[in-house]
Amino acid sequence: MFAKLKSLLGGLGAGSGGGDGPPAATVEYKGYRIKPAPYRNNDIFQTAGTIEKDGPNGVREHRFVRADTHPNRDDAIAFSVSKAKQMIDLQGDRIFG
Image (tube, rainbow, N blue to C red; front, side):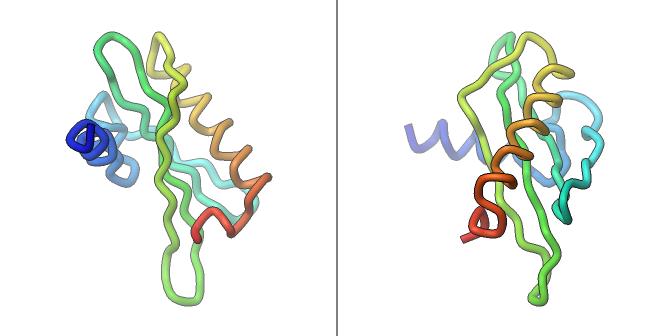
């Protein structure tokens, strides 16, 4: 199980798009940068991405992977952005800690 989780997180390079196409566009939201990075898991795409924010000590980063899957990359990108906005609205800077 650890190996699978490690491989999933390994595909979350900042803006990498998980190697399944060109990097998705970064979205600015309430002072945060959302970098959707869904990845292919067999014939479906997994919700994933990175939330970043500039701080006094540099860039803070939170990577996320969710269980939600999608039939195509565009739907996965849109949902990843939506999920990131929801996390920002609910947790704010606590997301980094």
